[in-house]
Length: 245
Ligand code: F6R
Picture 1 (cartoon, rainbow, N blue to C red):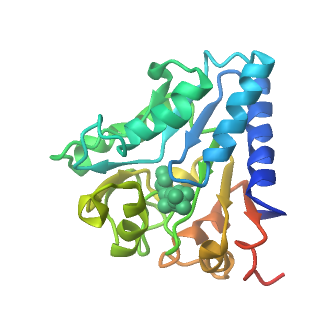
Picture 2: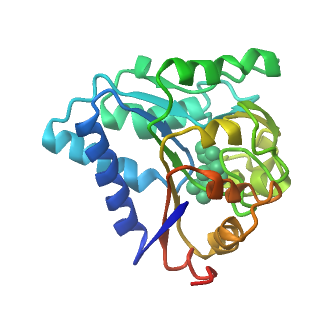
Picture 3: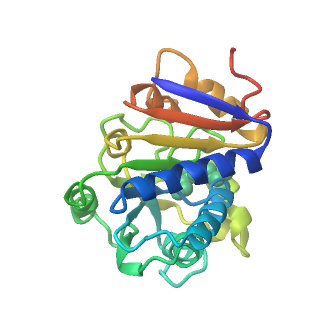
């Protein structure tokens, strides 16, 4: 069941998502939270950090799991997701780095060497709330079109469109964007107890329409959400523009 909330703009949506996260943290101080990178969740992380500071919220028992990491970037690279998550989640929220997990993605990563990530999520008790963004081609995490819906954490080949879109983060442009990544699989994401996807701007309108189109299809990774037990989309008007209401 997919619930859709359409807010006037990104700021209102980020505030609502931050409030939802804060409510979860107060209710369950040892919650396990799945975090996305990219531009979309940045406002929600900022607003959550403010709430935690203002209300002196206990964050000492939380656990965070990132969705993905590039293969071929050293951790200290400013655009590795180890660095991005440290900058946008770990430091502003004031949590200890030991509470925050990002998939290891060494150059010689193999499917066998990354199984540990799903095991680690399970050992932490499973993800209570998974934050998600969506790519223009509908990718979720780095699950590109065609990824099986039962996939575990795996190695993904990035499409040219995804590399082009992410080149805005790299000084050297698209040539600097890795070709491969380790990503939580769609199967991993489907196991989260709640999924919260945010999408803003007209560039996401096709991907949102396709995610809601019935029947779901592995060619439209966003349509995995139709199989999620508890899923909510926070959209601005522009991202919602092509939904059949
Ligand atoms: C990020 C991730 C991606 C992004 C997507 C949208 O960890 O897994 O799926 O959510 O590429 O990126 P933005 O938010 O930059 O538009």
